[in-house]
Structures are given as structure tokens and as C-alpha cells.
Amino acid sequence: MIIGIDLGTTNSLAAYYTEDGPRIIPNRLGERLTPSAVSIDENDQVYVGKTALERMAVHPDEGASLFKRSMGSRKEFHLGGRTFSAEELSSFVLRSLKEDAEYYLGQEVTEAVISVPAYFNDIKRKATKRAGELAGFKVERIISEPTAAAIAYGLYQKKDSTRFLVFDLGGGTFDVSILELDDDIMEVRAVAGDNYLGGEDFTNLILDTFLEEHHIDKNSLSEKERLYFRNQAEKCKCQNGADSFFRMQAVRNGERLESLITRRDFDKKAAQLFDRIKQPVRRSLADAGVRISEIDEIVLVGGTTKMPAVRKFVGKLFGRLPDTSVNPDEAVALGAAIQGAMKERRESIREVILTDVCPFTLGTEVSIRTEGDRLESNHFCPILERNTVIPASRTEKFYTVYDHQTQVDIHILQGESRFASNNVSLGTISLTVPDNKAGEEEISVTYTYDVNALLEVEAKIKSTGETVTKLIKNQESDMTLEQMQARMKELSYLKIHPRDQEPNKVLLLRGERLYEEATGELREQLEAVTRQFEYILDKQDPDRIAEARKDYEEALDWIEEELWSGQ
Image 1: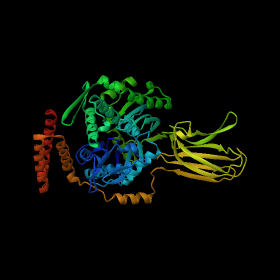
Image 2: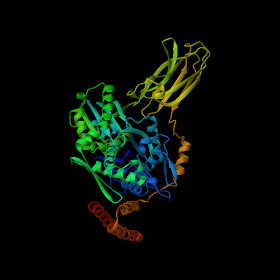
Image 3: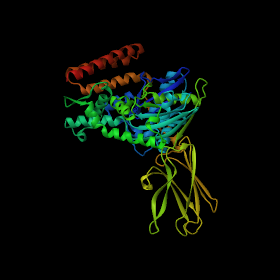
Image 4: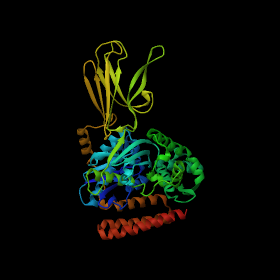
């Protein structure tokens, strides 16, 4: 069976397709969203999601979140005395979703369609695919988040030609994509975005305002305090609703602190973030060659688009209200599930051909002659322009620049700068050419880019017919099949916490966090109710545990409310 997965910066979720349409798969806590967080204790037990977040509040050095932003990089995360890459941490989240899906559906789940931001480059896309494979999935299709969202909104079902813009502002990334539907072909016309702009930046804005108002130096905070204040800022961002202000509360050294940020002040402080949003929107429209008035539908994706300030900005930017008929938190996962059903050729679903584009320009480094016949290197020559519909193949001809030149290096680059050194290096092909005069040896270079974001570069020497081909893989952290299998075996010893204990563990960790925040009588009450719950757990009676869990959760809710009202 194939499921669809939205592997998000802040939250992840899975969905499956039914005859009545796509449905979200609840996790082991009965919730639809699983926080993209991992914590590992001293016994090598892995905690994922809400449980990990609660544990990180007490043991911040043993957990990690926001690792999606580091996918495909060399960045290392140190948890439980061990070192992990971003894709390995993502694989724990994916494995947890896989287990939840198999438990809920009552059958084995072997394959997944996993979404990625449209603006993810080749390295990050391959890292996402590896994360799925490490989790035990067969991953044959990586789908761009805006394309998945467009499918979820049912835009693929429209009969007439439709042009729509997907505005995707998630926890850690921003994408804007322009797509067109014509008969049974859904074509991505242009994508643009920012891999380092999302809801976390709005959370940081609230946090920085709070710390500044209360004269707290961020550098003076311990890791636990830093995480605590950030969590309070996140609560403030998510709970402001229709209020005319943001209210952030926190406790430090026994003192209750509070800040009120009016919407007007917030909009002013967020102006720089909104300006960063405008740039990719303008670029996508320019690349697609369309005006805002020519867009038929505007749809919102990503949890951050639920913020009133963001929706107000979008309405003002586009001069109309966007379509919000689908939960923006769930749209991508639902669309990925529909794509999985299309891949299975379900009779109940209209099958469409999905085309994508190359999100970045691909080219090579060249030398050019300037005034005075001076040879200047470090220039970028585009071969496949950004937003070229894929699969695509393009060929450019190059020539030797020196007399008696016998070595040619094809430096494969990705980026938009006219200077080679400012772009991302993907690899190099080296060729030995016949000794000849400058400009006499011709080398044809062909770039072929497919729907799975694989780039093949072929270089051919015209005079000899010699051809060298290279499949570009992640230069930073790519693994061979044998290396991946070895790493999977190495990671297999790590124990995901048993399903039947997960709801209990998250409550106990919540109790531990509240105990650290409380004092006096509330702390004594916390200790009493926690001991009572632990006593019932030791009896291993499922019925008694279920009843005690409900009572314990109600007690924690009351204590947390008292903790704030009593400050």
C-alpha cells in the first residue's frame, strides 16, 4: 500500500486514499499532526513527536527539531551520546509515521510518496528520499509540496484550463508556485522560494520582542531556558486567534513576565519578513510570464498561513481573498496520498499527468576574453535555465582556451549568480583532449534532468568521439546502497518507544516539566498525582491505566491553569 507523507519542518503527517477521498492517518496519540522532533535517552530509546518535545523541555541536550532545514548538509546533531545527520533524524519521524499507519490501517505499508518544498535543490531532495528508505519505505516518487497541495484542493478535477498560484508558508520554508491545468496535464510553470523563511521566523520575532522588553540577554539563557522561552513564544503565535494583540507569558526566577504586542506593532516588526515573501512571488510571476490578474485561483498551504497577519498580507498582496477550503496543515499530505492513488491507477480517481520544473539554473564554469584579449575565469554559463519543464535535456558547445591545452574540467554548478564561485558545486568531469591550438578542440556538454531530480551530465570530445558521463549525486552526504544498508543495520538497535506506553510517557514527561515550573503546594500536588499514576502503570492493567490516564491528564490541565493564574 502507498501512503502520502508531508515531512514538515515543524510537523509531519501521513494520509491514505479511500473511495471517499484522502484521509489523514492519526498518530499513536490520536492526533493528526506529529511534531518533527526526536529525543534519545541514555538507554538508546527514541522518542518522536509530542513525546520528544515534552522530553526536550527537561533534557534539551538529548533532542532535536527543525532539522529539515539541514537536509543534505554536513551538519551533525548530537543526541544521547551519538551523532546523527538531518536525514537520519527525519527517518525516525518517518518510521514513526509508518508504524502509526500500519497500526491504524491494519496492514503493511511498503511505499510512500513524500513531499518536499518546491525550492529544495537536488541535494536536499535526495536526502529526503534516503530518509524514507532508511525508515523502511520504498520511495519512487518525491512530489513538490505546491503540486501536492493543488491536487488536494481538487484543482486537478477542473474541466477548463485553470491557472493557479500556491502560496506555501510552512514552519521553516516558503514556496510560491504557479501551475496550469490544461485537459489532463497539470504543469508547473514556475517556482520560487526561500528555504530559510517560515513560521519559526515569526516565532523568533515574538521571542526577541519579549526578551528585549524584559531586558533579558538571549546569550545569558541556558539551553533549557532558551527552549522554554521559544516554546512560550510559539504558543503565543498559535493562540492569538482573532485577538487584536499577541500575549506572551513566561516565568523566570519565580517571576511572572508578560508582554502584549499589538497587531499594528507586530506588522511593523514583521515588515522585513513580508518583504522577503514578496521577492519570490514577483520572481515566480516574472518567470511564468503572467500577471496577478491572470491567476484564477490562489490557495494557501502551510500552518503559518493560518496567522491572521499572514492572511491579511496575502489578501492585500493579491487583491483578493485566497481559497482556504482545505486545512493548510493537511493539504500537502492529502495531495501526496492522491498522487499515491494515481500511481496505483485507482479507478475512482481521475488520472492526470503531472509535470514539474527544474527549480534552479544548472550550468558550468567558463572563461571569457575581456578587453585587451585578457582571459577571465569564474563566469557562469547556464545550460538548463530555472523553471525549465522536466524531464529536459540541453546541449552547449565549448572550446579549449589555451594553445597545447590537454585538460578540460567541466565544473557542474547550480545557482543564479553570473559568477561561478557564488553558485553551488555539484561535481566535476575531467577530460583529456588532444594537444591543439586554442579553440580547435570542441567539447559538447549535455545536461539531462529527470522528474526524480537526477542530473546526468555528458561531455563529448568532437575530434576523438570520447564520451564521459556522470550521474550527479550529493557530494556532501550521499551513500552507496551498501553504505545505506550498513547504516540501517547500525541504526536498527535504536528502540522506538512501545506504542502502548506512548500516551503514558508523554503525560509523565509533561508532569516532569510542570514539576520544574511549579513551587510549593502545586509541586506537592503534582508529585502526589504523578506517583498515583505511576502506581497504576506498575499494575499493568489496561483498563485501569486508561482510566488513570484520563484522571492524570485532567489533573495536569488543572495544575497548569493554576500555575499561570496563581503567578
